[in-house]
Amino acid sequence: MFGWRKRIGYISPTVIEVLPYEFYRFAPEGIGLVGVTCGIDDWRPEEFDKGLAQVKTAAAYLGSRSVDYVIHGGGPLVVARGKGYEEQIVGDIETASGKPATTGVRSAMEALRHMGSKKVAIASPYPPGHNASMSNYLASFGFEMVAAEGTSLPFKDLQKQPPHEIYAFAAGVAARAPDCDTIYLPCPQWQGAQVVEQLEQDTGKIVIAYTHANFFCAFRALGIGAPIRGHGKLLASLAR
Image (cartoon, rainbow, N blue to C red; front, side, top):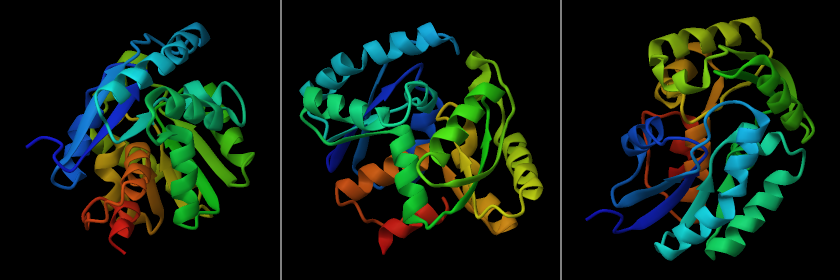
């Protein structure tokens, strides 16, 4: 039966398409995904504002649907509001939904700390400005950012880049940043989670995908410790 074990709510800034496909590739049996979207349309700041304005209402609705945990997606939206906003939005979601929650950039930092990451390289689909903002945000929390590169995909084409191209791009970033110990792949609309295991094997680096980080935090908070193999070291660490 769907979600018989736990139901995880997800607030997406835009359409929800790649994320559930990747989620059900690694989620343990009985864990269901319950998503809502805020329908933003592009990278403009006013679109970010529109998405963030809907978060409390979306969180309250997910709470009414009896989810056990709420994830807010959309790292660039939160990063654009400045350091500390990740805690504010999580507090707003928890108050509105009555459930524990996280947001993408906070999950990323928790995952990086859990894996002992110190020197981080970002490989993303974002334009240069968003890469710089994400890099600066992580640096403000003590991570040494050694690279931040993006493929500058149009907003509505994020899902179109195939995994083999993402692998090649991220492997190139790793080669150009040999001092990094971790590669971070942000964005749930990008099919990055599918290449984590192979990238780790071939580069010798820790690789953390946005989607994996979010659900790692959710699973850990909910006490879900089933072994997850074939999707990288972060998710495998839940079995310890």
